[in-house]
Image 1 (tube, helix red, strand yellow):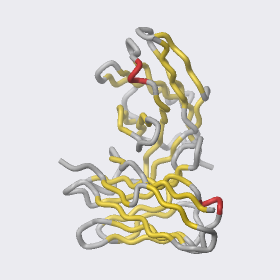
Image 2 (cartoon, one colour):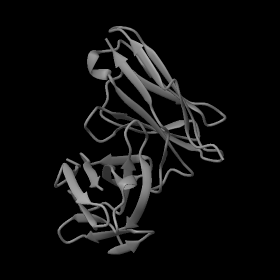
Image 3 (cartoon, chains in turn cyan, brown):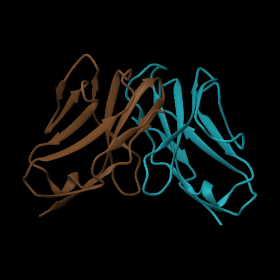
Image 4 (tube, chains in turn orange, cyan):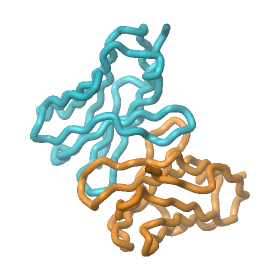
Amino acid sequence: DAGVTQSPTHLIKTRGQHVTLRCSPISGHKSVSWYQQVLGQGPQFIFQYYEKEERGRGNFPDRFSARQFPNYSSELNVNALLLGDSALYLCASSLSMGPGELFFGEGSRLTVL
Amino acid sequence: GESVGLHLPTLSVQEGDNSIINCAYSNSASDYFIWYKQESGKGPQFIIDIRSNMDKRQGQRVTVLLNKTVKHLSLQIAATQPGDSAVYFCAENNQGGKLIFGQGTELSVKP
């Protein structure tokens, strides 16, 4: 069975540009969460979506947005990129909204120049 | 505020020895904890979890201990192998998909 898949795996952008990252959850999982992991630190929660609705948001500016589609896949959008947005962006899926195991993808490595 | 912290950023052990990785958390209301392993260039991989109504849980070669009195978690890895080399994170989960991760401990296994 396929795990959580993310695309692209690597990308380079310049300051001021925008980026769209994509995530496909494990089949049957309805919850998708996004995390930002800066080098040398633990992942930081950005968003959770469940049944196509935003269920939680971390301490990130409005430049960050996301959505979930009817097939439960998800997109993370970041506008007006800053150098500090350079990070590994991780997507995780789970069966439900409640506390439980999250399955992570391999991430999208974003470099902002 | 909420935080989950790790006591040591690096841990070096000899192959075959047991490893103990510690973690402190600050939210006494937390009711679910997870340990993740992250290898270089990869996403976090689930190791073991524990709910707050338990104080110990065992898996294959791994044991998690929870001390709610002092808000402390530990991960014990028995007979550590080179393949165990990675960064280990503890995380608190009490709001669905919102995991609060600690800084991480890098485990290095010497052959």
